[in-house]
Image (cartoon, rainbow, N blue to C red; front, side, top):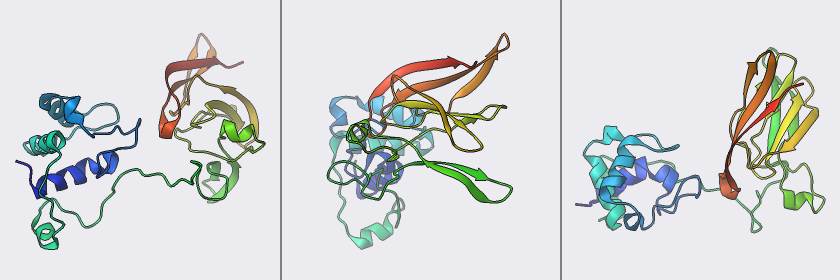
Length: 234
């Protein structure tokens, strides 16, 4: 049976990624609208209990998993927006995250003054920012002469013993970069098959160093991919 408490269960455990309206933020957080037409109750229960991809397991919810599945399957609840009912609901929270909703202007760009993304080096000994540079670009804006706008970026850097900083991360230009860690000067870059929204790894084979990055992309409307790209260092 789907109840007022059941919808609160969904909101508190699932709404932060998939939204109160179940629309999510595809492709990172898929829509659950009409999910009952695409998945069986058993499949939904298994995914919730075991997790999948970036989604963690919610097995600690035990029998409440079946209540959430019922809500997803039927879309029905008895949510009355009654403060008295909220106060009695053990799953109700006064404040919570309603989902990953990006603030964008009518053209789809951040409605703030660029740069919209930066790469920063912090001197931990002095507690100051040593350097900061715009990080990421939108190819369609570059074609119009708007460079160094910065952009969404997801993924960390790695640094070699010689002071090279390697990082992918930028979602829309799909670039992989090498910077001087002391100055932030760009030393080299290339375009990946899809955005490298991951932290690179460095390894050595027969005395030669390599740097590798997973190119999955797919963040906030960017193209997706399924490549692993490795580069040999000189």
